[in-house]
Length: 499
Image (cartoon, rainbow, N blue to C red):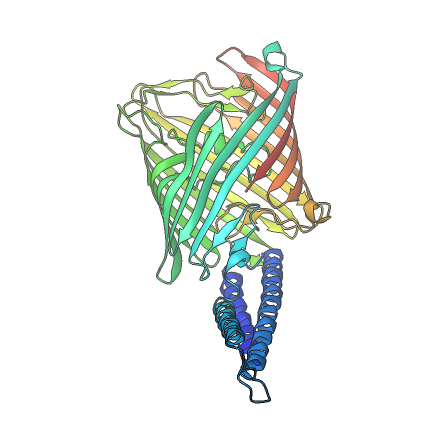
């Protein structure tokens, strides 16, 4: 019995080490917090598995002992034949014990082979929701969801129509993602503005090219365009994406239905995408075909932080349903649609293209980044028009966490909270500031504007946070209902849960 117990424990230890090793190796070298959490999680699973196997082994030993004692009760010690009825009862009990022993032996063998892969050991909660896994880890299923609710109030504008207050359910989303070996999938249905739309909805395939991890995506996917532009709206450090993400956006939108390939190196990544319009586009006209490339490099990367250098470029062959482009960028947290900078409408457009530059980095609990973009719109009746934007922003996690920015993919990710509120801690607090500049002056009637944003984020745990943003903005439009110089202040509050 001891040999079975020891073999089971050894197999469990080997399984945990085999699981922990590749995961730790795949993690970013600067993710020490994540690595510690992974090791602690695996250690806790090992303790639970050992306790479970010990209990099963004790039951098995008791049955084996009971069976041995039962074997000596065939007849009375006096030599008198036992009662036939009692003999049948004893035989039935012995058969039952043998069945119980077979079941227990199978359970112990399963634990030894899978490291406790059955039952609760196959469910992980590190993403805020359950992630179900097969015993060998090749098959996963993770339900997804989010609720994002905002309050916004604007005051100080010279136009009364801009001084408004209100609430907004920015997003209510349900979906799922998972893996089937190298094949993955993701689907998100977004409920916002009393409408339903599909966002990230694609199939993925993980492989290696030239020894490097390579990912292929087919379907509707958020485009890999810049720091904020390529990040989910619930992961950015502010309530809205920055000016570069807005001005440098493609005519076909933030999402595109098509093919994306991404190659990931030790301190760099590169992606290439060919996409059409977003899901739900006009089916009576040809798609706008977009070609997008992006790459980033970390020339310095250590346990304390890294330097990020990146750039991107896209070109769009506009569909025949796009006859003009009229860019208006929001500068007051998005909900107040009256506070915008107008670029003025450009007619008879033929194509457009843009580039973006990225520079920044992190150091322990500090981060700072800057972005710049120029979008050029071509027309058959006027000269080409440039639309420009610049964003500079920085932050400090005052409770000591590392910034939730992925050196691997060059976009914002999850902030790993050291002391979650639901575990008796204080959560994580972050202070952030941003400057955005909008420059549409190249057009005959293009406007300009800027915004200073101060923000505080309280991360209750890895999947929920409260946000407060204060924005002081200025606009000077030459067209529309709010022409001339104007300024004001907008305060926003957000509550979100994302898993």
